[in-house]
Image (tube, rainbow, N blue to C red; front, side):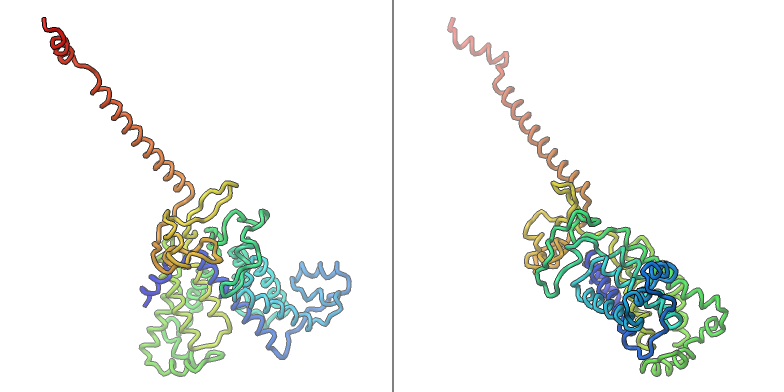
Length: 413
């Protein structure tokens, strides 16, 4: 199953991984904001906010939460916090369906949840709350900044935004399909830190249940919110439960190093093992969006460092992604698969047929290849002309014997 999954995801481009990650990240944000709105008893609000905006701004830098501005706006702080959660929920839903994917949208969701995190105090100091803020900060770097990549409509509807991004946006010279390779590594290191520390803390706690591999014999019956699957897992033989503990320690301590491996194949193997672990935890326990967020962080781990389309130089000096195939039918994928809102990000084999996957080349490699091909053609042409001229001269130049014979034939005496 893992081999089939790895073969399937190998066809995805870096931009496809980014879109999937942003949708999953927005879903985690939606769960977090909906959880706030569903609470009957709201956490305590910060005290000390006064009418002047300067005082509210000063308090923001000491405790960053938008709740300080509730009093200057003349609003009840609980109503204001609910409004912040509602705004964050709306942005998260729009980002989850792909309408809004701009980095500023994810920055706004980060600020909204940071405000609720500060207001929630002890009730919002769980591991998943902190992880959501850390992942949200890294997502601002990973999300697209160009308008053409960030605004689209679902179901293939045309975007109201022009496909040409404005010049003042970062990476505006690239099309929507290109993904800078360096911005994905903070997310990979975040997942590595989370899993490695989760495994090491079990050993450092010096708990005999973990050291003797008996933790799962108590875990399913003593966790906070068990699921119906926890009862079935608790009935498993002790041998299987101890094997489960050993597998958990193996996945959480040595195998997280696969998540930061230079090989994309090793990273995908490590990501699939982490997703498998998170799926088993979700089936046996309710930890809010924690496991969903952890599995979401596996998506950029499995992505390529760069997009699968090469960059070609434009007349204006910018960089755009173009298909590597010189055949127009292959570049269009033999059907409608090569067209769409990705701006050239889909590969030829995504279409109806006839397209073929090609290896990515950089702009310099493409330019050098074209120059070498042109030089080769000119060299072969010059060589052919030289050989033709040489043969012509050798055939027209009179030899000594032929001239003597001609003179004898012309003079009978």
